Image (cartoon, rainbow, N blue to C red; front, side):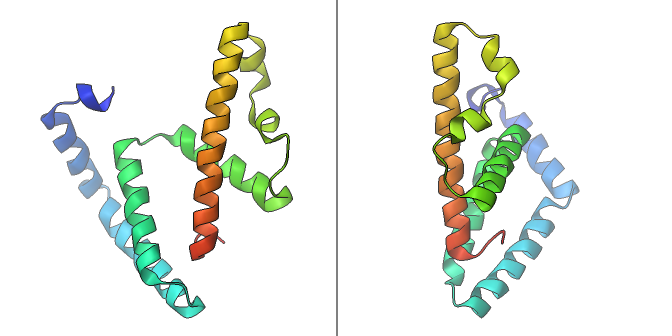
Length: 133
């Protein structure tokens, strides 16, 4: 269901579920820990807070586990080998790709490329402020 189709009642339900599951307590705990690490390594705590607030907004707006697992694949690739020239090919699901028409393959490759660039940007930002190392 897209954001434009959600009702106020659905948003309230999601917010209540986040409260019930301790989402905000976990957020505060993680934020405090990362701020401490940032301060001890000389990174600006405001950058860490800005990063975390952006991540929370993105996760609430679009809680997609698929994006997070894709990011973890990109992160592993970058950690182990750095930026490689064939990253899109490595991240492509061959079974899905082989089942597509020519036009669909083009769209699929473009989507993978966009997701990869977004993940690389997140990776660089996390490394800059010392998160996830």
